[in-house]
Each structure stands twice: as structure tokens, then as C-alpha cells.
Length: 127
Image (cartoon, rainbow, N blue to C red; front, side, top):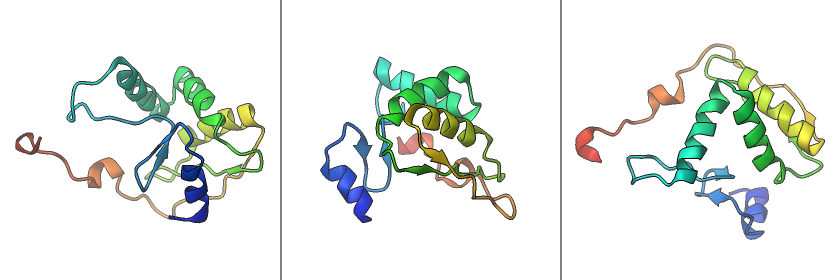
């Protein structure tokens, strides 16, 4: 874990850290258990970020921007197809709320498999 992540975790911010990822809200799979209304809402917003919908962008940016340091730089991550569209829209909303800079410097030479295609899938008998 790099020094910045250690510093964030040490601050005991109200976010979730699983050792690899930091998230404002925990994304719970309905395969784990019945979801609470708040968890259903988090999943709805997460799906809306992929399209992206204005409502999902506004809600996510409102929740996320309070954790952005004033000297941060946002870098939209390209999708598996190399597009930054949905991530750029979220970065723009975050920058508007927090006043930070966006630097669109990443790309892909060629498309790569989508994470949804390469992640292992649970089989009905595994759950």
C-alpha cells in the first residue's frame, strides 16, 4: 500500500477500503445477502455512472467530492475500448464541486477485454 493510501486509511474517513480499493460506499452483491435499501441505491447509482445519467453523476459527485484534496488532479481512466466519456463526465462534475484540475492524458493503443468479461463468474452451485 502506498503512503497516500496509508494516510487516507489512517484518517478513518467514512469510506470503505478493502486493501485494494477505496470507495465512498460499499458495493454489495445481491449474491452475498439481501440488500438494504441504501445498498440498492448504491447499485442504481453505479449503473447510472456507466451510461452516464445526470442524476447518477450529480449524486456520485456530491458524495465523492468531499474526499478530494484541493491540490488533487483528476485523471479520467479510459474504458476497455479506450474512451474516457463517462469517466470524463464524472471528473467534470467532481472538478466543479471541488475546484480541482482535470488532465486527460491516458489512452489505449487498442481495445482490451472488459473487466466484466475477464472476472471469474460465480456458478449457481458456488453461491
